[in-house]
Length: 141
Image (cartoon, rainbow, N blue to C red; front, side):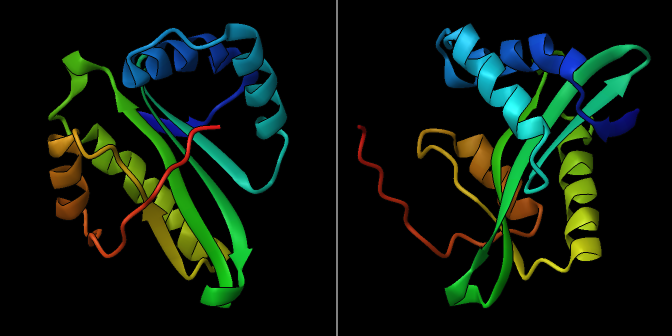
C-alpha cells in the first residue's frame, strides 16, 4: 500500500467515497469546485491510500492558527476506507501519515469530530490515541 497526496485525477473516486460516507448524493459540480480549490490551498491536506493502481482510502484535514491553542491545529474532516478493505490498518496508516505531517509542520494538536451514530468510528479514533474531550454543536444553515 502507498499513501500519497491527492491529485485532481482523484476527484471522482473521492467524490464516490464521500457520497458513501455521507449516505447521500453530493452536488458534483459544487464538490469539484471545492475539491479543486482546496487542492491548491496550503492549509488543506488530502491524502489517498492506494494498492496497485486502485485508490482504497482517503483522509482530509485542514489546519488553522488558533488563538486559544496559540498555534496551528489540524482537524480531520473526512476519513474513508472502502468497506472491502477495512480492518487492514489502512485507516490507521492514513492517520499516522497525517501525524507525521503534523510533526513536520509543528502543529500543536490534531482534532476530529465524528457523527454520534458512528460508534465503530469513535472506537477507531480512541484506539488511535484520540480522546473524547469536547462536544460539538451544529446549526444547519
